[in-house]
Length: 388
Image 1 (cartoon, rainbow, N blue to C red):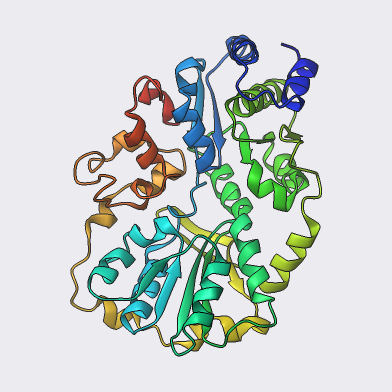
Image 2 (tube, helix red, strand yellow; image 1 turned 180 degrees about the horizontal axis):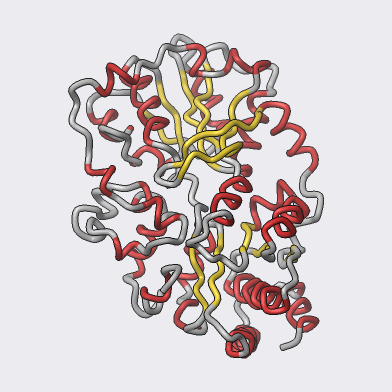
């Protein structure tokens, strides 16, 4: 299957066509076999990992191709102190609204679910607009939206912040993150030896694929934007290894039905009107310069960190910490380890009793690997650690 045929197949939207899938897999084996070495690439999206596992794609990939999941799960990289802040506010009497997976993410001493079991008012919402409705329905309560996620959900939060009729009792505790700086961290880590990145299609709908051009040129790695159907991922991988083989450090858009070079300019305008970049810790990974999206000064009245006193020092005082510090989510999310390298995986750390954040979210590597068992859908786990 030549490049023109691949582009045509993607454009036809034939997501589950077996003949096209077989041709793409064959092309992938052909390219990888022509390389003098193993090649490691990284996708930066939990939805990609879900699809890879669900459809057993690793079982048909060349053994000399490592496809590693990077820091693409927003729940997983929400730092423990950020969870602790939400727990403290809940214990102080605020009504905490957040997305479903966040309620079970372990903090330093407890999760929001544990706080809820102890009597705190914590609600799962499916959109920030639902949180807006809750605040209007409970005008005598302080309602805090624990806002998590990458660019896609940050845009929705920004739209609410810009609403002229935001209730006075609603505030935002932002744990939103921005993906490109995390890719910089991975690219600058010598141990990873990543030779290409598969970028998340839904985030690129907002940012556009052009945002990766400077990154590809600076770090001399290709970037391919891909969707989430099996053929999207296979076509994206074919394009990525072709570019890596040819030493072409450029960006390719394999999700043209949704992504443009410029992205959604109106959404970008709203997001940057409300948020600014600031450095912050991503759970288990590192301090990521410009990795956090924080509310600008003009929106200080909506910032829970400014409206309330959040005393984490007394919250930690004398309270035993959980096993969370023993998990290796950080190395897993940077491609330096596999879930099976963690001594807690499948033992103390299970979906029903998660120790680390990677076992909580449906986009977390550990949860996905545990759900699909590892064999044969995920292939040989030894192939998914960088440096083997």
